[in-house]
Length: 174
Image 1: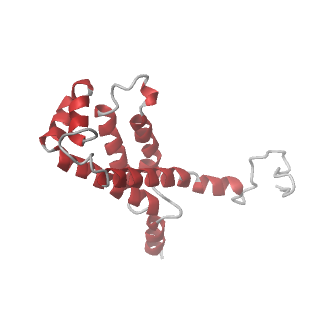
Image 2: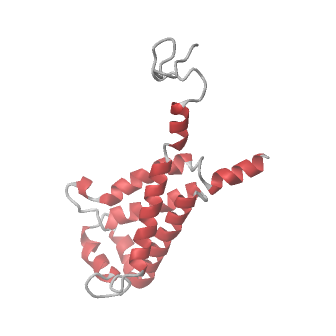
Image 3: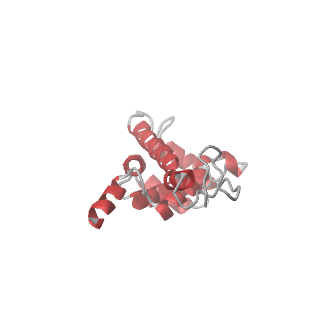
């Protein structure tokens, strides 16, 4: 099949057929999840660090505290027992969420154990959706559900390029 580099069309006139050469579509496909991975990784690292450095958040009571947040969302959450669990020791729960976000974010950014990190990110997002943002109306104003769905492609596909996972896999192959 002849391929014209001038037009990007092959001899059949199909702009998407790269003639089996692994052209731009193959490259775009390989790198398609990288922007999502970097966005989610950076966002989760930022969210975790923001919580760890917020004097008010990691307290049992007070304006902006994890304890008051949990008490305020408890009755409107989909899983009140999960909120009750967090209220058993809200400061420890706040640290667990913050450190979990940092770990998930770093894993996604560098592409290390990406599927595991993505499952962690999805579980954090799921727990926040079922508790903190459950009553957000309309539902699409709540970002936790969107993050849950955004982690799904990384759970399924991992990080095949620009990642430590890819380097480890290449080293094993050799």
